[in-house]
Amino acid sequence: MKRCVVCNTRYPYEDSKCPSCDFCPTLVDGFESYAPDLAHKGDGFKASYFSELAQLEPANFWFMSRNRLILWALRQYRPHFKSLLEIGCGTGYVLSAIAESFPNATLAGSDLFVAGLGFAATRLPAVRFIQMDARKSPFAEEFDVIGAFDVLEHIKEDELVLTQMRDALRPGGFIFLTVPQHAWLWSAVDEYTLHVRRYSSADIHRKIETTGFRIVRSTSFVTTLLPIMMVSRFSQRDAQAKNFDASAELKISPWLNSLFFKILGTELTLIRKGFNLPWGGSRFVVAEKV
Image (tube, rainbow, N blue to C red):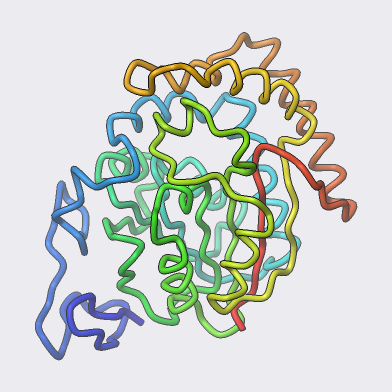
């Protein structure tokens, strides 16, 4: 179902217009838009960063490793899902991997910025992409799974977003989340990428549970590389965010990129065997709507 962002009336997903107030999303750069005023200038992310991300993601160890973790978790905890929405889908890198692994699922992607959706639609021309504000979702009990991968940390009202995700899930639906972890890792990278926070496990768990979810699995990742990450981030403490190149630490030599990918592969093996890693640059959470 859709939920009108103006009057909250529920109506069929396929319908374009609210039957109660006649609200109809506009088109912004060819995409269905539910928050057009924010499509080019919303807070929380630099829209100009999408073009660089689109080039970096397919071959970078961190993005590749995160995709492997997400795909494994989908197969493990929700293998027969029929519909999935990714909030903050950006360039569509994660969704493209999900589409390849789950060809029979109906997928949708959303982002606040239409700049990213252009790349996503090129990667996945058959997927429905919409522009929306995650704090005011136009969906109600529509999806089996909702993913938000490194999104919540950009939004001040993260608990509101979690509530909107819960409302958009069908009964028994699942969320899959990744967030950056440990406030003591805060650096110019976080400032440049417009993070509001880095999470502790207790903080993200509390917010998930108080918004109506039961945590099914939670683990850190990027654990084995945490000492290297600490050195990198601590050395950036005095950098000025406005002159800082946040993508620099992703532009590493091919041999080092390959080594880091293999190292993170050992973490995935441990996670698959049931180990929940206590520390790491990021946290991965699977939770069920209750």
